[in-house]
Image 1 (spheres, rainbow, N blue to C red):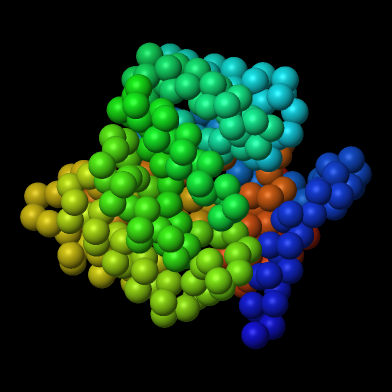
Image 2: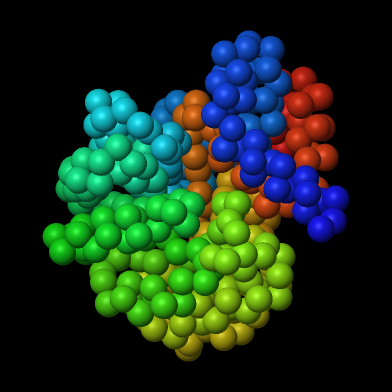
Length: 317
């Protein structure tokens, strides 16, 4: 294992360290320093800030998705209250006539407290997004939650046709999960997968096996005609996939994360492809930011530069 690989694994482990997360949140100096790093990847602390960012993305002719961070909520009352935050977000997106879907982690709205609570809150949110005319996208979490997420998605698809789900190319099981998902309504978002996983369940990050799995699964989605998001910042993968697109295809989009793929997204857009940028907001950004840095350990150097920069000049993405 290289030094950069070790650094990446360390960042993923830090992302899951709840004690460290609390120390950063409670210490003003640490919180200020960490936020300088985080704001490269985060659309703001508040919904208003994030919605303004979405409006700027739309002004470039690009779609967006917006996600209020806070996965692994373990309090039932809070999970239900957070569901209402998402519902209000859907109403605000509609009021501002933004081209924007709503993304969320099911563990944010109660699935790890109780699966039935998660399903009830997800159903409330599915109804709210349907009323607002938006797509609702369920994010994928660690492999230990995959069965629960797919079970919830299946239940929602019995009532709604606008609820999508994310799958991770890294997981060995994904090739077997795709046929069932292609039989359900709702967009399928394909990502590589950022979680710290054992090789018994996932391809190693950066491996040839992962690249092959991503290409195979993306090709399956593109050939199927099913609505899909190909979520990658890998220019080589994008180039190879665009060469495989069926003639006249418009059921797909390329999706990238705020702060990571703006120029590549614009290049894909200039090439005539539908594109979407993923905007997160909120104060629960620790896990998200650590995982973004871990995906490319060279970003540790950018994080050091951002941390050292004056607050007003930290963000360049």
